[in-house]
Amino acid sequence: MWKLLLFLAVVMVGLTSRLAAETTECIEITSAPVVISAQGVYCLKSNLGGFTQTSGNIIDIQVNNVTIDLNGFKIGGNAAGESTGAIGIYAENRINIVIRNGTIRGFGTGIYLNETIADKSSGHLLEDLIVEDNKIYGVRLEGKNFTVRNNRFVKTGGDAAGSRYAISVHNSRNFRIVGNHIADTNSGGDAFGIRISASSIVEIANNAIFDTNGTNSDKAISLFNGDRFFILNNKILNQTSGTVGIDKNVLGSAQFCIGNVIAGFSSRMTNCTYTSSNHPP
Image 1 (tube, rainbow, N blue to C red):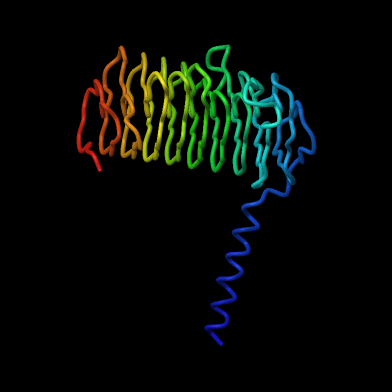
Image 2 (cartoon, rainbow, N blue to C red; image 1 turned 30 degrees about the vertical axis):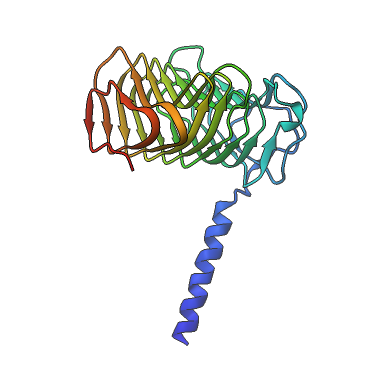
């Protein structure tokens, strides 16, 4: 009897965990393009797709303190074609935006959290997303105190000329990019798995970055014009020869590159201030 009770208890815990993973107490997004102008928790309860617009924002967040839980569903823009410049989810000068748990596919930029006024973009969290087949950027971020964790960035870019970025961060500080899977970032120009510029106090840790392929250059992690980067325990691998695994072109000091595994690049690392336990596989 006790074994049966134990089994039932385990089953109930599993059911409770699955139920807790889905956000049901929320404002459902049933159609788009849409402007979010009230704080709260928003969610999908079905896929949103077939968007043919090649510019503008599919979901435009115009207020602070918004959570968007995709609940395992998709926002899809592939119908707009390879040259689209549309943005899947956009917010400008907002605080505490959370986007989680679903797929954003086929836009010019999957997610863009923008800052045009200093210190007005802060506290964001992107987690458990599949950001797939976006044409220029998987995500673009500006601000401070944000985290990008446990996401999959797949097939960013394509054959067209120009720079392509799975994750791009500019003019930001005090943020973390951890535990992400970044694969097949391609460009007819320059390809970047993670590109950080004009930023400081950054942790990039425990990411797997595979096959960053650009016609001109390929850089799994690129650091430019900033200070105090901590590049820890990343797995950086290319099938064909890339340009640089970890590329530092930084005016500041204190770039720590520790415990990274790097293979498939002409140069594994450039200009890290402190290195330890970095090695090929």
